[in-house]
Amino acid sequence: MQEASSTIHSGLRRRAALGGAAAAVAAGAGIGVGLARAEPAPAAGECGEPSDVLPPTDAYAPDFGPGAHVFDPSTPAAEIQSTMDSITEQMRTNQFGRERHAVLFKPGTYEVDIDLRFYTQIAGLGLLPGDVVLNGHVRVEADWLSQGDDPNYKGNATQNFWRGAENLTVDNPDGQIERWAVSQAAPYRRIDLRTVEMQLWDGYEGWASGGYIADSRISGTVVSGSQQQFLTRGSRLDGGWTGSVWNMVFVGVEGAPAQHFPNPSHTVVDAAPVIREKPFLYVADDGEYRVFKPAVRRAAAGLSWDGGEVEGTSISLAEFYVVVPGTEAATVNRALAEGRHLLFAPGVYEFDQTLEVTAPGTVVLGLGLATIIPTAGQTALTVADVDGVVLAGLLVDAGATESEVLVQIGPPGSSTDHSADPVSVHDLFARIGGAHAGKAAVSLEINSRHVVADHLWLWRGDHGEGIGWTVNTAATGLVVNGDDVTVYGLFAEHYQEHQVIWAGERGRTYFFQNEMPYDPPDQQTWREGSALGWASYKVDDGVAEHAAWGVGGYCFFNVNPGVVCDRVFEVPETDGVRFTGLVSVSLGGVGTIRRVINETGDQVDESTFASYVVSYP
Image (cartoon, rainbow, N blue to C red):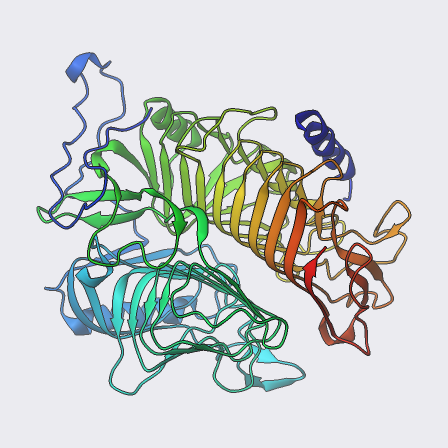
């Protein structure tokens, strides 16, 4: 399989011509608020280290840069609200700006109404969601983008990207709803939401196109409304769920609706076979900042924090190098070479070197949608073929000089067994075009075995700056060569060839949402050999075992509506390759997809918008 995988990768590159580990201080079951204090790293010159090593981070008074806003219960409520209102106003329509914000609340109770906009992360700094209680709202509104031909009608949530909330309790005022009208790259994690109703769209007639909830408890009813597709994983829905459009997917969710597809389109999986929740920053009782790295769970259903206990490892921030705006890539690599973890403060980082993660167990955590731009056509970040590395909370934005790969996990040919301690990736987003002209043949390449990916949005831009068929060129979003890779929440859009190529054995995908490129200029330009177009999700012909649940692909060929694609999914004809809950859609009837998977499924076009396949084969 590895030789075949290498061949696939080389072919992608040709086709792109379209234009040390830190010390753990607490581990195991039952770790709670009473965690023992993590010891700071030794000062330079101690324990025999050379005197020119980078100084340790002050874990009690760290510098998170100008984009971080840290509140504690002594901060006046009016000051908190004023700060939030100012951020909201700055980021309301700031879809491609360079400002980044992380709003962090120390343990306590607060009165605040947060209207969450672009490039803003809201997070509690407790070990458990109940340690930080916000009486009010953390909401996303769709009141800024017009819909259809009427510029006065707002309510379009399809561009509510790049924001997130995690690790806190939100207690709505009595009888009020919580609106979370989002599309891609807007994770809702580790939240205890106390509300009568959570709406996943604008509440009226506005469009919404995708979202992700994980490790959260929601007391009221979740109403999906116009949401076209959505993934909820590892959560508890005390008030249940109502609604579906094309693809509502639930993995390991207590209170999920019953399996039923396609009307309503609820694809339900009892448990996640293997998962690690996203690491998070918190403040211990003595005021020390730490990062909690959750343990790997098997056959996981429900909350990771239910019962007031969490399993995993706590790492003092003294073991991290905090990257702030203006830091050079060479300094970051020096920190990695010294065995430091990385915490990226909110900001945009233009780097001329590849960041190389080589130590097992390294945590690379971004705050406030920290963004990395490779400026020399290099790979932005690589991970060696080692155990337990975690990448989380990063946006990688392709530079003007083409990169062959933006993020690579394991070098080609990786074969080490990482089943006991897999690499995990959380809230990793890639962008080609939109903020500026960018090019990258492949956004994410996974060569290591047993990798777990937990929420990806890989996006070749369809609007913004630097957009065009020969301008923001990008062949493929995700290439998987490693065996036993599991992905939850795979969003990949607008790439110019296959959106996903899977060549590893025993791969598993739980939720796939895709839009084909909007802009093929003509059929001759956009076709693979004798086939019309490119299948969005390609499982290599030599793969014997693969499975996917809750998957869909859409077309909207607005540059040339006469363009046709033969199918969304192209897979080997074997019993070991199985798909459940499939849909293809022609958005507004603009363009044609002939089949859903291989030769199965009805055509979608201007007369028939959606086609479903319950299972294949």
